[in-house]
Image 1 (cartoon, rainbow over the protein chains, first blue to last red):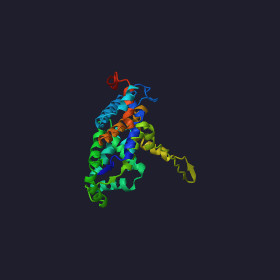
Image 2: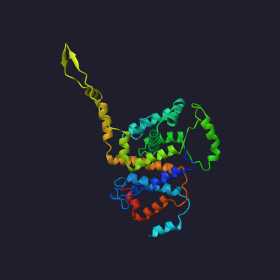
Image 3: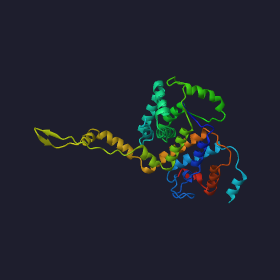
Image 4: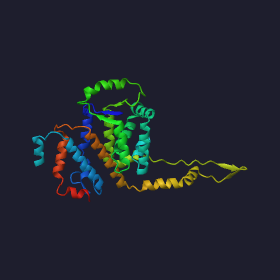
Length: 80
Length: 241
């Protein structure tokens, strides 16, 4: 078998994943609007319900794998 | 093997299905499987490993209901993702034994890819997500036909030159028209969507294979900010628009 070892999800791999998840263009897949409201690109989900559907499923999977709770500073960001 | 990425992500679902089926059949044969893994482990360049693993993983989430199961079956059978946290100690010994094994020992052999290959997989998925058309162009470089004209003479007199290329087109016109028709059915917009769906699916598989740390890292904050700003008044109704 091909055994892709993350080596503790090695720091490098985690950084790579974070790079992808930190890119707002990824999250434009959730948007149905042509001009994404939070990043200056045409939404990846514009005119593509399949993309939006997969994006929301991805978001759900992300939340299911996210353990722990946000810190107070995160809550502050939400209020701002 | 260098044709694999282009075939796994081809615009024709028929070609994708055939390629993945052939790939799965090859991996079922132990001698061939050994050679494929040896190639990936010892011979393939970083770019080739990135493309093969990335396209294979994306194919497991192909939006076509005939394509995805074929890819998913071979991926689940022959690829494992082993986070080395809780399993590191238990697998350490087996890792040593695996490394010491000679090529061709059989089904139990597990070529180990390091974090570089995992990073390569992520790079490919990221490219598919952010610039799918560029990725597709990279996997399918434009081939410029070479017109080879062979001069012929009859009794010393030159006869009109017939292009070999033209002759090829005449012979294969039906086949090429069919293949061209299948490819032309997919617009650039649909192609972008198809590749992005595959990329999202691959990314989901990667995340599903690991429990994400609970530490307050940037992506969590960014996600929450995006989530808070984006209007959620009617998200689900728009998904199916």
